Image (cartoon, rainbow, N blue to C red; front, side, top):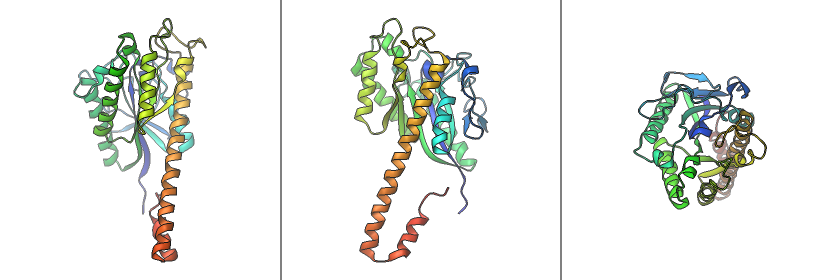
Length: 289
């Protein structure tokens, strides 16, 4: 059987600290052939090598639109760290809007509908171009604006649950990898209810996985550029941490799936007493590499 090119499809979503307010010149270069950007808005007919500032021109006036605001993000560091472990290239799609509250991401709102359009276009392009999607996921970092607005923890939690799960359903995703927001530099307690809501969501759902909590450590390290945003080394550190954790999550999940298959196969071998013939059929089901 001839294999098509295997990729992991990831949507990078949220507000400004996902969009990136760093310095692209200080971000790592992505390993050649291991990271690609699908530009659903500006160039949907091909993939581009992923580089910073990621998603800088992916502005849809009817949806996520922030011209000139994306200056350097965590995404390149994430891609390098993740693909170094998995050996599978990542196709990234940008859909992050600075200053956005969770209510602006609710289903039916322009940002959500734009994200779904981008997801469907990405899947269609990859399928028609002969790619095989191994894993599909979203990486979500949002909540600072809701902290500023004093959004109640319970309200934020309910709305975020709805945004994440309805988007995963509409986009056909397996997992939401959550990057916890940091603290407001001058009022460090302001964002704590939002951080608590994020912890509770990750604890409540198997398909919401916390992959970084490091943003809240950077004020003490002098890595904040203003009250809300970070210097590029901070974005690089979070991206690397999150990318490694995503790769480890996938590896653990695949090991569990393999063990389940082997256990089932061994049981079938015993019950059916067909020896190596049955085992050969099992081997033929393993993914091609």
